[in-house]
Image 1 (cartoon, each protein chain N blue to C red):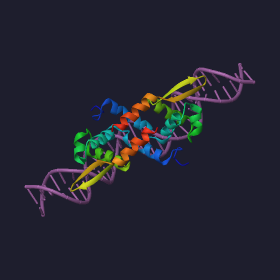
Image 2 (image 1 turned 90 degrees about the horizontal axis):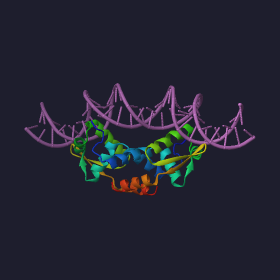
Image 3 (image 1 turned 60 degrees about the vertical axis):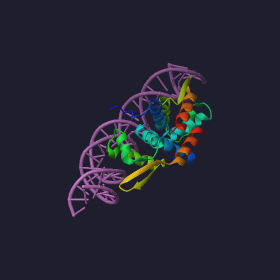
Image 4 (image 1 turned 30 degrees about the horizontal axis):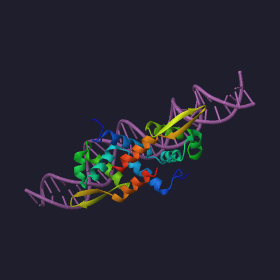
Length: 95
Length: 95
DNA sequence: TATATTAATCGTTAATTTACGATTAGAGGT
DNA sequence: ACCTCTAATCGTAAATTAACGATTAATATA
């Protein structure tokens, strides 16, 4: 049984994006990045979670394609993937 | 530790709504209801899942406030909560 | 009354998620 | 070389989720 549940590719993508945003810490991270790029460490400082936990949440957002990380020396700078966020808004508005 | 993760009430609601839509079967159900009201049984027939599983997914959407069920005799008619869906689109567009 | 039909709930198992501390590896600084 | 900082990864425990069949309760129909 293929697990598409009768959804189109875009809709499956939307579902995955929603899942990624379905945890308050991750929505918060997206919100922070919407205010501007942010070093990973700053995200950790702003959230009431352990470094490893934040790193895990960041990874979920990265793998969902919603954010992009660039290594800068020892640190990593994260930013929104604006295209993905626009697609998200677009697909959501079509519901 | 309060689990608000620094989000406003609306944002927490958005996060819960996203979580509810974060499963393809539930996004599909929302999509079906966006095409028009639907008896619970019809949803079951349209999804490749057991009745009890569909019922469970419907419950998640109901508890997230995205859909509304009205008992009609032995059956239950489901429809979108249009206000909630509009709020969802609105909050998402503000990201 | 007896029998379907409908949909919710129960009980259970398997899989996934969340959270943490510990460890690791690369960059920089002294 | 040595220590510090940063962020990813590992290992693990606890909690939650997803899926199913079985049961239940309420309605309809024969």
